[in-house]
Length: 312
Image 1: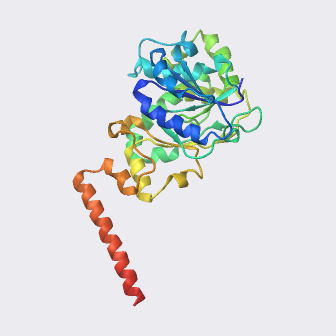
Image 2: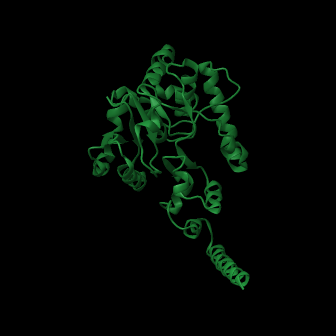
């Protein structure tokens, strides 16, 4: 059993994303950590191309076959619910004491080490944040914050976690098998629940883990901020581009970056390393892009002219 491993839940439509992620994992996996790539059994032959000494491809039926559902819930597809179940049930394999869940649309941007995930030999870090900056953003607040807050409060109420502050994460949590074992034995089983029953109450798998962690304190809690920088919508990505933030800048605080494929998929694999102009291009019309390039050329000429004039 590994002290820490990585878990990637993917499927054929995300093959290009997973390919990019695994390439970056291979590049930055400086301690030969193990990544388990879990996909539907019909997709295993395709994803087997990624198999290596550090990457194991396995079917979701082998991981959580007895827990998977055939129907969706909360307006979410069965496939979406099943990827949540796989993440919650992976501990049952006994393959890892702790595992870091990473999304297909992530890209690692610096070396990854056990110390990124583990506080000490026994205890993982816990990603627990309030996401205040997201509540500030009008679009995120309108589209996601209010309904999400209600669902998270529902988990807290059912579990009996009394706290005026919501601390959880959107994803990319380090799951402790010890905490998940306790969640199943001491909470789900007492109610006769399956993973699907819990997700029927609220479809936020990471928050079921996080709220039980805070309620039970099965392991010591060593909170950290997110390990992955996520752009949830185009406004967030555009703001970053306009600020001139680079991968080198993000690498000072994060091990990976995500441009959420839920909104960016129509633009294809959005590059993390293009120039500012090239990165802005997918968001702009031809006219807007031409105006941007013209303005950039004008500004460059003006700066050069002013510099030359000041020298005289």
